[in-house]
Length: 251
Image (cartoon, rainbow, N blue to C red; front, side, top):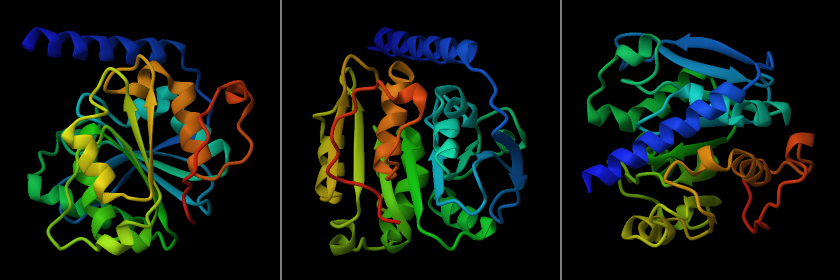
């Protein structure tokens, strides 16, 4: 089991490196920091898209960082569609100041709300969380469904937060549950997501590992754009065969 886990981790790192090697800077992305009350040092993030655009928050998995969303092309794709995208370096990850911050697990439940307040967002937010990023994203989503345009869970961990979830509101929250075929799309973890987010659609990316966006970045980005309500895909994604979605973010 340890050998399998090590191999899977090495494979994911290799996939990300291959995307990094191919990535070309677009000039759309800026590196920024912001003060969050619960953190001792500024929180680093990558931002792209017009400040007045509908906001999207990207939360990476445990082996990755904000830069991952850049080399996958997600930041550029969403910004190019006129959305305002922020990808965090979660505390303890990345190479910037926020990467040096060791955060108590309890603070995971407050970070997103603190960030949204600090950024001054008044619009609904689309949250995209991968794996460990769900421990930051899902507590806010579950406790504040009226402020959420939609939730994209990419094999994300689920934490319902400290309060009692508004099950009725969550049953109407548009959610896209994305899994790699080689991951665990039929697991108890997957069923918990489906039971909580009733207005959801599960998409399984063929022959893809846990970080499925690394194996099929174009398909992943096209799915997120469609879920965000973008009608016309950019030229580099125009030929991607995107499954029909019956759920979409509600801005």
